[in-house]
Amino acid sequence: MIVKNLVDDFGFQLLAGKDGLNNEVRGAYSCDLLSWVMSHTNDSDAWITVQTHLNIIAVASLLNLSCIIIPEGIEVDSDTITKADEEGIPVLSTELNSYKIFTKFYEAGIR
Figure 1 (cartoon, rainbow, N blue to C red):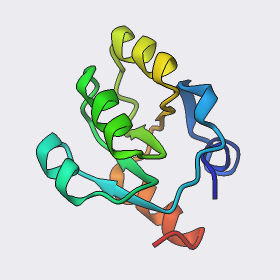
Figure 2 (cartoon, rainbow, N blue to C red):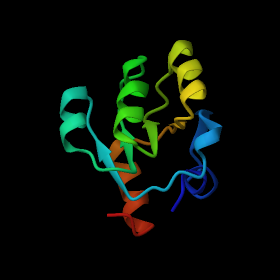
Figure 3 (cartoon, helix red, strand yellow):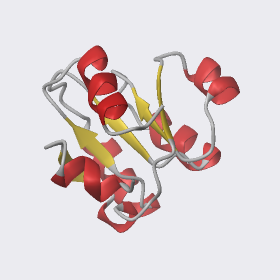
Figure 4 (cartoon, one colour):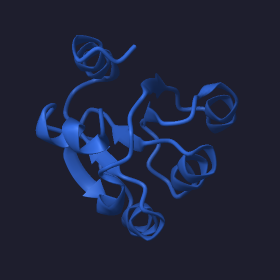
């Protein structure tokens, strides 16, 4: 699966990082503590977080994450959007909560 499938098939909204729409999604991880994310995610994971500040882009770039998914319609800082576009890190938004996002991943065969 690629990030574009999350937009097309799951109905997630692309907020930034369109250059990364072809990034491969191999898994999903949800956590809001950046240091924990840095020690527990895998390459090409989609990261679900309620954090919206600039540091999420740095973490996603450093760890080669496929995208960042912001749940529950949380508004993302404009500086974060700008930096995500510069770095080519897709930032997606959805009204779904983390549990429902994981349900979609599971139904699509992503474990």
